[in-house]
Length: 233
Image (cartoon, rainbow, N blue to C red; front, side):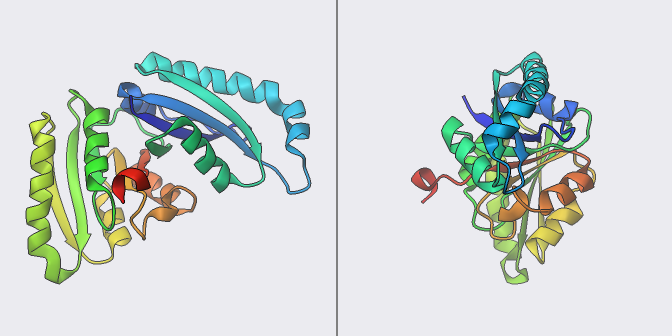
């Protein structure tokens, strides 16, 4: 079963939107409760002080994910390096994607980007599993150079047919221009966004400010499908 890692700032009031919980009801979830420590604070000291409160919050979140339909567990980490911790735990649990939670209700429209050097087959497979047989409409999106627009439209339609073959309602949209800006322009009107980890302008989604900007623009979650070197080359 596909697993999604959901990082949460567990001691800073971090939470997960009901819309994300519902959307991920078709897959397994690991909730990663993390707290970034000052360099001089030993993790064991923080764990002694805060573990009980953090575990209570994580158990509540995990139970809510289970109630949404999928299997769920949690990890708790006190760390000095958020990025390395998220990557390490994602590897440990074999997560196929990360999630950045936005504030949203039901997810009825999903924006899926296959822009740039991403593993489109993995993204499409992930979308098929997440959507399942639910009535969630998909916009399949690509941003390209003007010279590549016609060919991109044809390629995007081929990808859309794969999703339609799985019973998913799909429309396509090709934009000419800077990939991240054009994607951000397309986000409004959609409840959640799926992107690939390997796209050069989107890699910082997991660890930078762009994820928060995109989640705010969509008022919904952003799911980042991880690049797998063994499968994607």
